[in-house]
Each structure stands twice: as C-alpha cells, then as structure tokens.
Length: 630
Image 1: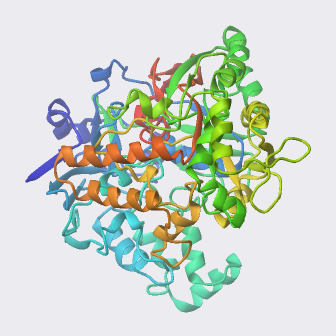
Image 2: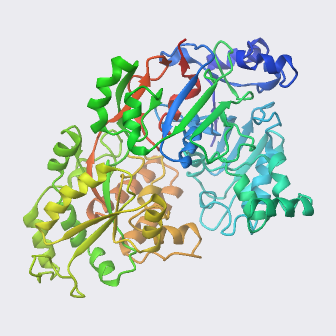
Image 3: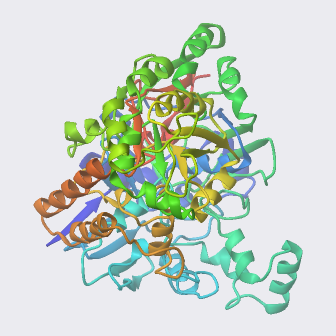
C-alpha cells in the first residue's frame, strides 16, 4: 500500500500559487534587498513554501520585528535555539501527529520505502540551493566514510543487518528503501535532536579530503589545532549544536555569535521556507537573544523580567515567586503539562563495574525493595506541594497505552514488604549502625550520582535517604558536572544515577518503544548494553539478562509488525516487563512546568505540553509564529 504525507491543508494548498510572488518584504531586510545584498522575497522563498494557517487554531497574523530574550545556563544551551526553532524534514504538530515541513511531501510504501520530495527553490540560509545533492553528500561521503563515521551510518537507518538503498531520482526527489519496514525513520527525522540525513554539501566539501585542495585543507587543520581533516569536518558540521556561525542552516534563526560568549544573537534566516496565510514570510521576530547566566539565577532574573519566553531551569517551586513579579515586570506565568514519564527517577546501574553491586542490583527483589521503600506521598507533598502524582517511571495516563498498574505496581510505600524482600535475598547481616551487609561484607552504601544542576534532586534524595535507612540501606549523593556524571555512568563507575524519567511519556502504538529497550548508551540503567547496540558490538557489553534480551526481541517484533494489533501487542509486553522488573524507580509524575511569557509576546498557547519528545518543548507550537506587540 502506498500513502502520501502532505505538509499543508487544502486551504493552504490553494493559497500557495500566488504567495511567493505576492508576499511583502520583511522590513528589517528591505535595506539589504535595495542594496543588492539579498534577492527579493519572491526569489528567496521556495516555489511552494509551507503555509501556516494561523486561523485553524486561533492564532493571530503577526507583525514583524523585535526579539525574544531567553536565559540559558551554559554555552552548550544555545542548541535550544535549534530545538525551539524546530524546522525539520517532518515535524510533530500539537496533537503529536507527523507532517512534512522542510519536505513538501513523502510517499510511503509498506512502511519500508520512503520517497522524499523537496520543495523546489528552497535555499540554505546563505542562498545556495537545498537539493538532493546535500542528501547524497551526507550518505556517501559522511555516513559511509570510515574516517567520519567509524561505526557506520546511524543505527536508526539500520533494519536488522540492512542499511537503506538510497536512490537520487532528481534534484528534488530521493528514495530510501529497505526490504523490511523501518518505523523509526520518520520519527527520527522529526526529533528534537533529529537524525540529520543531509549536510550543506556546497559548504562542507571544503573540509572533506575527497574534495578539498590538500594544501588548503592541511592549513585549516593546523589552524584549528585538530588531529586531521575528519576532526575538522566533524567540528564544522554540527548542525544541532549551532557552534559554527558560518554553517548554512534551514532553521528560522541563525547563530551570529561564535562561542564562548555570555550573549548569543540568532538572526532571522532570510530564506526560511514558511509563510503565514497572508503571505508574510516567517519568522515574525527578527532575532533570538540568548543570555548566559548562572543556572541558579535564572528564576530570579526571569522574575525581574529579563526573559520573554522562559521554561528551562524553572521549577514548580519557583511558581509562587514568579507570580509575585508578574504585574511589576509585565509577564505572565502559565503552568504547562510535562511529557516525561516521571519528574524524577532513580536508575540502578545494571552494568556496574563493581561485581558485588552488579550481582545485587540484578536481583529483581532488590530493585523492588528499593522502590517500595520510597515514600512518594511525602516527596509529592514536601517538594511538589501535593500537585504531582505518585508513580513508577512509565507512560502517562494521557497515553493510549496507559494501564493503572504500570504506575502503581511496586510503587506503593511498604517498608515491611521491602524488608521482607531483602531478608529473602539473604541480606540479613547488619553492622552496628543497622546497615545491611552485601555479599562481600561491605555495608550496603549506595552512592547516587547527580549532575549537580538541581536542588530538586538533592531534596528528593534527602527524603529517600530517610526511608531507605529504614530497610538498612545507606544513601549518599555525589554531585558532579554533567559530562563527568555521564562518563561515570557510561563507564560503569556509577552504582546509581538520578535523572528525569522517560522523555516520551505519551507514546502511541505507532511510536518507537526504543526508550524502553537497551539500544542507547544514554539509558542510565544499562549504558553498556546501549553502547553495544549503538556500535554494532564494537564497544560495551551484550545484554545478558533474559528480560533485557526479551525487550530487544519485542522491539524487533514491533518493528516488523504491519498491523496495529502486532505493534500494540509488542508495546504491551514491553511495558509489562518494565512494570515487573523495576529497571528504574520513578518517584513523582504529573508535575507542572512553569512557563514565563512576556505580555508583549503573542501566539504562545495558554495551555501546552512541555515535552522533549515528541514536541521539542516549544517547537511543536512553532515559535516562528510568535510575535511581539510594539
């Protein structure tokens, strides 16, 4: 069966014929157009731009001009401009359904053959054509280069042992074909951190050993103080990180400030491919300004009116303070839902380097006991004002896959049962302080690694410390920088970590269950199994627990299923395994996210879902359609 995804409504399609030639010029670009520095708007837009019909969901046609100020805690956070901007080959809408965006349309055959149709006349931010040459370059010269991709193409492009057959049909049509279905392909293209299957070939070839003049390339390698041209190419190609100000992009705003800096200015992309229904080119706002400040100061600075759109680094316990500043500093605080499976979750490391701990944590009774000894009601009331819900780390009630026992099984506070489980394991010996002794005779002291970025995590751990003490387990927290934190977990040096729950707590049967399966190194409960999958067995460890092996089998079953019933069956068993195995210990879910919005900023919804995946936080609400009242 063949289906086609279009990016526009019928109403929008009828508009497109005259839009490019009838559009008015963007005021801030008029001078550059008059000076001949830029072509006129009809030559900058694709022949068939994506039309955003603002009337469909009650938004208003905006006015050009102004800037949106954001506060971020590190230079690395500038990538959020590309998350919020959310121009992708496909994007999720606010109902979490996929629609072509950069692409004009997609033909899909049996879930295994995808023909991508680009918009004729679409251009990179430097005015160069965006064509299938950019896809060919990535596939042939990057993804299949041993120097640039030593582990081969991204695993999302692999079905079993098969990578796609990639066929360039013409400058605006390219086909990716597998012999079996690949349901991961389109969602990956729409991700908050997307699978990039294209690079600006016209720009990147100057850094590639197959294309560049050898002497010039060697000089650039020396100037950049990198090991070889492959390292230089990788540094220059970082579309997501936004660190290379010379890299052409397809996003609504382009970074104009090289890092490091404490102020980054993202200027409008003159060649952006979207317009509103009246023909005005988006974005409305001329620039995003990201100011870098201490993370701990972001709530205070937001409350004093120094941000126009702020959610990152704000927590529910900031809400009362922020509300006090609303009238004085001309902003409004709204509470959005979160899409994570749990606000906070503990991840026992099943791949720990410590043999005694590894044996202990792989016993299902131990993981269940730890979960039963968490007083979620107390944490909810003390830390979250009783506004959350006690839960395991699983899908949320708004997901069609939700079952009540996914949230409650092994998540009730029961010290007696937790102690009984540990006694059943033979952990009956205790030291003089009442702490149980492990098989190696050492006290059961659990060090929980944190990224050191949030007092929220510290507050939660202090409460868990008190109740775990009642089952003879001593908890210590160890904060560190995020990169150190990740390295400790990935290397097996961490016993346990604390982080947020699953990113996508709102999946449907047609969305990938990969977050619940050991296929990624950044899954903190089994990083080495994930690394093994990501590297094709070249690093990490092969899963050696039957439950984990079964999860991989079910993922394959989901992938191969052609009917909804087969995909739902696989999902159900995956969630049942997580319910019973307690691979992670969820604490509280349903905690609301404060969003501070300048009263001048229009078209930001009253209610929303603040979710990394799917949704890209603000991305699915299209910040290019937000506009500032004078």
